[in-house]
Image 1 (tube, rainbow, N blue to C red):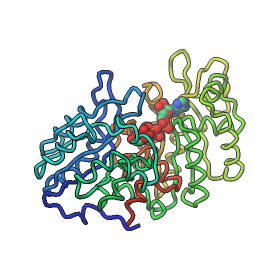
Image 2: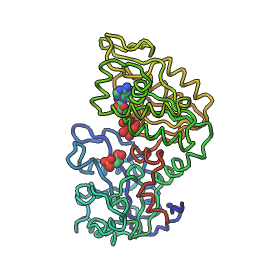
Image 3: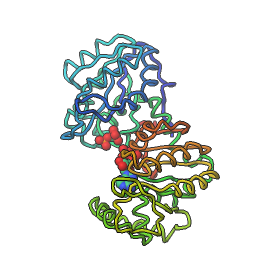
Image 4: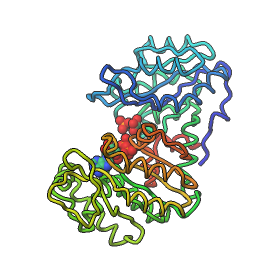
Length: 399
Ligand SMILES: Nc1ncnc2c1ncn2[C@@H]1O[C@H](COP(=O)(O)OP(=O)(O)OP(=O)(O)O)[C@@H](O)[C@H]1O
Ligand SMILES: O=C(O)[C@H](O)COP(=O)(O)O
């Protein structure tokens, strides 16, 4: 891949359109509940500003109709605090007013445009050449001298602001994009043996990651946890009880039990399942060996048990690379954090560790776990890369 980076971009009063991904969880009153994605882009934006660029930031927040579909004013205010340069905001994306604000920027000043998804074409996916003709790109491109894409977390979307500008302007990867491509695009070069530590609740995605990891020869061992492990346990013939079965049914994951059974039949020697689990009994955590399931009084299976954490830790001791996606349990509930905390700490202590997933990254921050070699900013994008798919917004940067 030949992707130009900020090292290849000469800046001297240059007007740069920069696509970032600052799509963030919002509090009830619309404030930013987590600014991690904004902080991730500080290096790229500071570098462009310090080197004399006139920086216009494009980004989305939420999805049309969703509760987090909000303006970017709070994001602009936070950038103003995080960056050593003035950051302005305009509540327009490509109107005459927005274009005038871009043209009025001085060297070293930044402007955040309004949520790109307030404009309807932005929530559609196009071939890059067609995306370059959309109104948003058509109106803004003449006001930029160059385009920087730093929005790795949205790189799996072929939406206008992500793939269109690269057809009209010289395009470069920002520092976040560069590092993500470097790490996730070179997983096959990391120390072996490799373990995929797969948990969380997106069972179909996880099963795709596991199959690709094994079949592409990337993963030597799979350590399952979270809801993913529950599905594998059921596929292995374990009766988890009525509540767990109802939950799998409610999530429409019934057919995933067959997918998991196929994987166990083909590659069972590489896939580890929990030996004990934590359930909710009268509101409290209770750990039960898997062989003792189902018990009549317990509720849903909410976490992996301590014995499983120890066994997985032993396995990771001889692992060169651990790739982690998905919490080991319902970590939002204090009674079911133990598995996630224990397992994540062990992964962080592995020789080389890579982490992907929005909730996974949130759990890491919540528990203050340090020591990972790479924490991806991407959820769906990291997942797409780990399953060997090519990402449209990265493809168009390849010159
Ligand atoms: N045993 C379980 N039963 C039900 N839910 C679980 C279980 N274990 C973990 N979870 C849930 O999984 C969710 C996170 O899983 P998910 O697959 O979305 O992670 P991620 O890939 O890091 O996140 P994102 O989707 O934001 O990229 C958490 O909300 C957690 O409560
Ligand atoms: O949060 C994400 O994964 C990215 O910002 C992409 O958002 P989307 O799934 O709404 O396109």
